[in-house]
Length: 134
Image 1 (cartoon, rainbow, N blue to C red):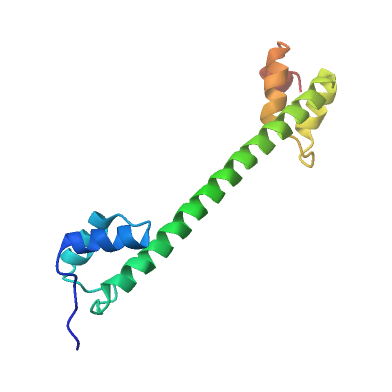
Image 2 (tube, rainbow, N blue to C red):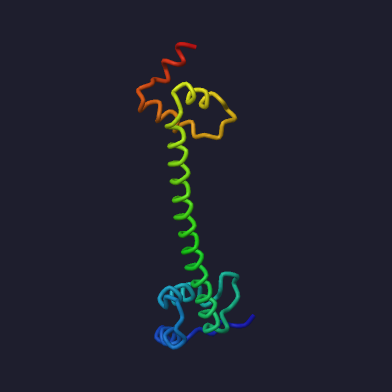
């Protein structure tokens, strides 16, 4: 099996990253491969550390882009959920107490039952009263 060919110094790694404008933390890269005695995660020797740096650069760029897109999607999703909840709450507020109780008892109704409970509580209606009267 071939032996790894590590860089001579940490400064050599830093210089290459600066020269190529790579998005890699030189200390993390250096520590990772130094501790692993310049073998990769599959146990293969690092024969070209510059190529490894370029691979790490591509991985870091993907990770950042994926994180940003996921974050945007989460924000959009949260905004959508708030709008949906507000619309459903407005619609439910227009219903009478009897209509709300009917919706709550209808298991097929696509409404947030907890939202109905909130509206009924604000109106001073006790759900336990309804159960006792049945």
